[in-house]
Image (cartoon, rainbow, N blue to C red; front, side, top):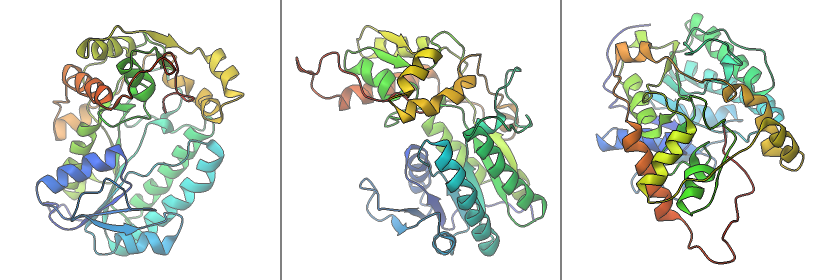
Length: 338
């Protein structure tokens, strides 16, 4: 392991082209860094001139091919929101990523989440919080965290886990304040919240996540083999953010919280909402994130909600379907992804 600085001008492979993958890719493209986007199918919104390679993360050789030739890689993949599927997919995918990283010596920035901390009584959450064995999805995240930590201790990989809390931003639909929050408000409808509307809750702005990923890609090797939290704007409540977004687009905010009991009842008919029940520890208490470690090494000027929330609300308004008599009052069949 060395501590030589990098400029990220070599090829960077990005696994997944969802909101955080796009944010990272856009920032790298903007300064001329070559990138390779890989996932099962070519994204319809992939800019011209960006290299694409099909990849199945469950196939070790496919992952190795995607990482070969790259100096670094960013992992931003998502998996169907099911504890059963996570148990099947994530450990295998992580084993394939680790094997490819070891074979190619590519440094890895993994855009992770915070499920591995599990239920917590202390706030804010620090990177050194213990890993949980709670539930299905949190336990799986703990398992794959232990996998990369072991490989890092043994000197086989250079791995940085970048952990944002719930995120939001233009183009981010599957989020607590996304399509079922600001998206419905933009249509003059009632926002549906799994979160408790008046509990303090941290949110990361997706462009800030991309910026943080690039900060790690540019950093020296001593910043790897550890976890980092993404800086967030000062903590607000979901109600405050939805009201801010509604005001920005001239709408009156209407909010319908879904209780845990209601979630269990609706979950009888909705597998997705049923999967949300075990994650109630992220919304039934204050959820604050400590990003002091990242701020002291890199930057702390996260995008203010006064900028990010209006931009998100305006994006939803611009893409909102025309309201008709038949569509008034209808709501989507699912709520936001934690």
